[in-house]
Amino acid sequence: MQEKRKIVLQDILAMLEEGKSRKEINEFYELNPREAKVLWANPKLKGVKKAKYSIGFELVEEETPSESGLTETLQRPYIPEQDVI
Image (cartoon, rainbow, N blue to C red; front, top):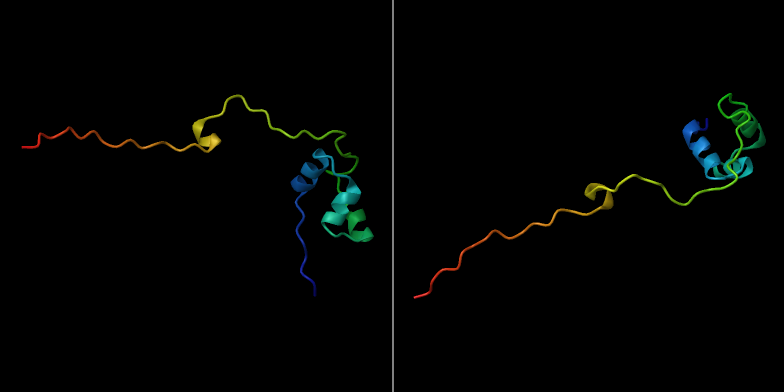
């Protein structure tokens, strides 16, 4: 018997928000017509349409150093100069 695939509803909704069509989603998950009919009959997906426009950025208030990928720079400890005799 074939193993069942898991399809997450949030992933489907995200793909619709990105502007993907139902046909593109069906092809991505390799759904046959019967599987597609069952998927799109789900109450959370019924009547949901793809976004007309997709946006290629995410708006954030302020970027913190940890979000930007910067790491703290370590400084060498201060060593006083020694007199050479």
